[in-house]
Amino acid sequence: MERLPVCLMILTSVAVSGGAWAAAICTDSATGIAFGRYNQLSSSPVDSTITVQCSKDSGAPTILNYTILLSAGQSGSFAPRKMASGANRFGYNLYTDAARLRVWDTGASGTVTVSSAANLRLRGKSVHTANFTVYGCVPGGQNVPAASYSDTNTVTVNYQ
Image (cartoon, rainbow, N blue to C red; front, side, top):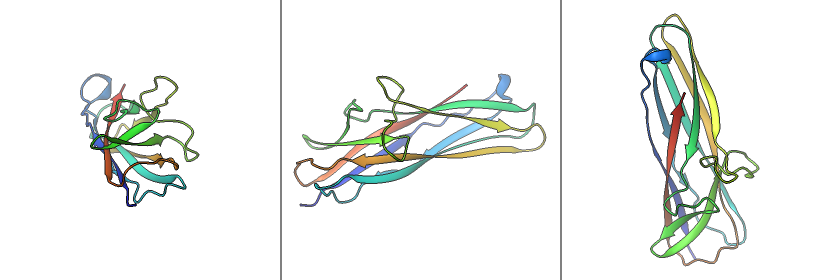
């Protein structure tokens, strides 16, 4: 049976200006996750990347802290997240670690977020680019009808 689970990531982008941030501009981007054909006998691990880039042209040195959150997806649950094909649901999850032990979500109910900082220098144009791996996995043993399954997760980057 052919099952083609796909997990899409939708992004929010934020421009930060004024105050202590001295006209820093930040954007984020992510690649979608395509799990490929499902093998019911084994799990399907797939990785993706979220990129955060901040820049500023001048002003005082700035340390811009940020936290990356992932939504639970359209099912509203991270235990596990669910892709859908009509009324059928297909479990998967997104993790912060290669061992796939720490569920990446909003930090609520035992999930975790990822935090980092952009160090923007004083003189000349300063750019900070950081890549964060999203570790996805579809567990084996799911008995679902053959179909293409999908979900949409929102990546939110909160800047402080």
